[in-house]
Length: 334
Image (cartoon, rainbow, N blue to C red):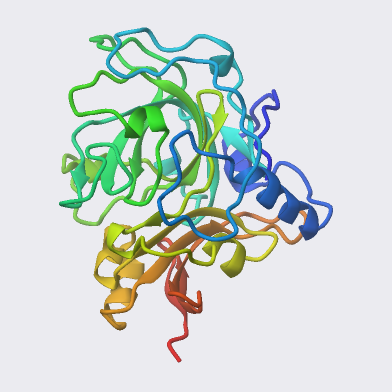
């Protein structure tokens, strides 16, 4: 998959979120795109025990400075004006769309959203894991807006969505490397995710999770640079080369989003449905938690997100399902 800027006039919100923007001639073309363009290099160095057969591609040149602790205004340079309009064959929509109230969107419908991102420093992180408060071992929230805004500000924010980044979702390095006291300015991004489902326990005023509107599964582009796919591995398991779950467990038409290698007792931190399945398995055997978008295998097909639990090290599928729709739709523990 190649993320490329394509200026278009935004279509209706439902069609933007539910219909692919173009037809794929054959699954093999998307396979080439996934391998050659979807997983570009990340600005930070790869994990010490990188998975085998890494995915690689070109990266767009960064054209805006980092926004950590320098008090500079948000970028208005080329990167700000060229947020990609596509994620694979999904057309990006603006963050002003009311995703959480769109009854036509299923909780597993994949949507691409382009806008300006700022992340809250008040996050919940797994004790003893590096990278707090913005690292991938933290549960983070923020704002994705239609335009930038000055920081700090007392003025009303632009139209925006409240976004949630679960553990395992990687953020741009300029954000992940920041400390709790650093001042972060909004950066232009292209993300892919799903509408948030309000928990049944939420009232009209409730905890922060009740305000979530978009569940982000992947940041595909940030501030002029494509973000590559880098599996996240628990430090206790980061001791050897392993098969790449993106190329082994997915077919040529799927779009991979994230992969995390953890012990079964930690899966619930990323996905409560998958966590319930993992907890019923063997506690001493680590598992891969993988999230991907189903491939479009015909004209006009909707795109849906699914999760999988894979045995380690043979990547056998233990279970799979769809966020908010199915729980453990496939189970194979034999």
